Image (cartoon, rainbow, N blue to C red; front, side):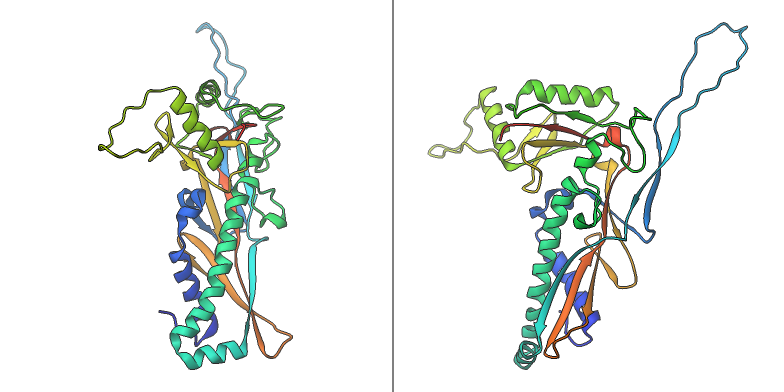
Amino acid sequence: MAIINDVTKSLMLLVEEEVAALQLGYYPMLSRLNKKIISQKTVKWNTNVGGAGATGEATTASISAYTEDSIIGASLPIGTNRLRHSFQIQKEDRAEAASAGKGALRDLYGFEINSGLRVIMESLSGYVYTGTGLAAAGGVVGLGAVVANAAYAGIDPATYTAWSAVLNTNASNRALSADLLLAMETAIARKGGNFTAIYTTPEVVAKYKLLFAANTSINNVLPAGQADLGYTGVSYAGRPIIQDPYCPNNTLYFVNEPEVALYTFSQNNTGSTQGMQFAIEQLPSSNPDAENYAVYVKPQLKVHNRAKGVACLEKITQ
């Protein structure tokens, strides 16, 4: 149990406790992504964007042309933007809690920290899909930007066509169907890719259940007197379909999770909790009877191989 004495160090212990206590099931993608820590201001990796060729010829032919795959450096910034929550504690509230005991003092700070971590995790859960890379999104470049097929990580698919993702879209929303799901599965296979999970909204999951019910015969194996029309799990082609309330509407993301990682920036005031680096700092106050604090994280999402890491089926009726 943390004791609020040395404020900064004790509050960092509280951050660790509160993150550990968060129900990560409420943040489906964040709970499943690989977590990595970095202290460089750029996430860098090499990617193979293709280009090699094979030539059929006679053994007497001279060789004058050489073609190899292009290995291009990809990079994303990190550490220059953050997701932050700030809160204020009145000193009279702190004095009152301290007089009541260490537990009351811990609860006073713990409540504020828990609230801050919750809104940060909620925001980050959305930005892993919708992040534009701008400061307002904490600098996160989300999956929507990955599948948009503009330049990503400094590599333009207009130049390197192998650096494009599978995107199945339409002018307007259309009903989810087995044909659309099979089309996605086929397109991903054509790319030499894979997917380990499908992330979508709770409403689209409900549509999938209706689609399943309309295309199969369900035998009742429940004890006599019990009725259950629900499902204990949802999957497609052996991969789980994960309902994520932070996923953009009308969209399904087919994610090859080993290709995707969430990075957080480590510095001298951060601590690792649940694989992520959080920081808390006391801020200057213009009110002598108030203490100001900020809790924050510096994240970035990396898709190692854009073509094989993520695909998107959008414009689906909810």
